[in-house]
Amino acid sequence: MKRGIFCLALLLGLFIISGCWSKFELTERGFVMGVALDQGEDGKIELTTQIYRPTSTQTTVSSVTTSASSINIKTRDDSVMEAIRDIPIHLGRKAQWSHLRVIIVGEKLARSNNLGHLLDLFYRDHEPRSSVSLMISKGAAGRLFEKKPLIEQTTAQQFLRAKESSYITSAKTVDYNLLDLVIQLRSANGNAIVPFVYEDKKLKDIFSAAGLALLKDGKMKVVLPSTKVEGLLMLRNAYQSGVIEIKCPGKNREYETAEVISLNVKTKPRMQGDQISINISLVGDVAIGELKCSNINSAKAEMAFIKKVEDQLSEQINSTMKFLQSNKLEVIGIADTIYRKNPRKWEQLKKNWDTQFAELPFTIQVRMRLVTSGTISSKPAGFGG
Image 1 (cartoon, rainbow, N blue to C red):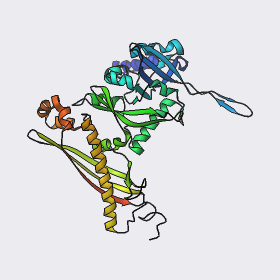
Image 2 (tube, one colour):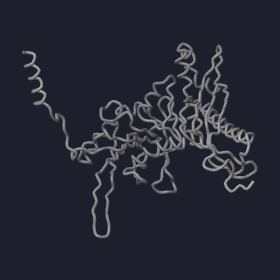
Image 3 (cartoon, rainbow, N blue to C red):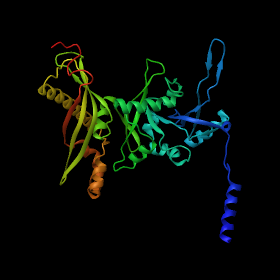
Image 4 (cartoon, rainbow, N blue to C red):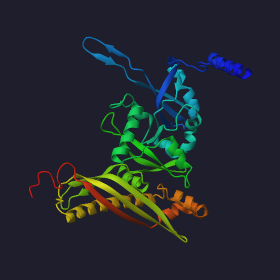
């Protein structure tokens, strides 16, 4: 009986105390969509915060007028937190960070500061999510937020979608976020890759999410060109989809193409005593994209076409490896593999790992399969033979 009374009292208490104990009104907050961080001439941090503004539409007899969907607030201080606390001075609302889409760090700031330290607040505060996209820009980051979005409501959202699409459909960058950065910084060698973004100098409001910023000790060291990103994604077995171009022999600027449907890559270090080498094997399927100079009318012709694809894939891998070795930046994951398999061995290697990686011999093995020619036969459209 007493137990029943206690349970009833507890339920009544829950009904009484239920409610919004920490509510805030929408009109009291400004929802942040994007943040740009730059280094000022005096060394201070310049913060550009893009805040969503609910669209107001005015309709007349002849037209519909829509106001901009976002505004940019600029603040500056010695620390990120103090710069953020200055936002209400101009906005008249407290910044709300739960809907933050993207953080862009200017190249100058990224080269002089450890990104893990610089972005510490965004990991520590309870409002931003660890899934917030992160990029490094060529030149000043704040300038990019001044451009108009092409199709999205805000520039921040446009950056987010451009980066995602660039990775999934073109293999020109990676779709990484705050969580991915801290995982990389805490890996065996601490090197990291971050998506790179830049503006088109000739076309207004056009920017590109392509290429990667390579980090050492948390600081940006060099940019991996977009033409070599596909090779890096293959080495990391993170290749989603892409196009392989094959030059037609004896013809200037005429290429055939093949689309990579699936690709499985194994990058394995081989250790024999103090000698280390890397074995890279690729197995996958391709589809014909464009034919201009090949007529695949036999098994022999098909094998010849596949061989061209395999050679091109091997060249991409080789070119990317040479770039990484020349810059002494191992961002493939070999150090992590060695550490997991043999922690003691890694303790011996890590002090001079960058130099040793630059001299590692590697072999490449590629085996591809042609699975489809598309909706027409395996010869150029209009081919009469």
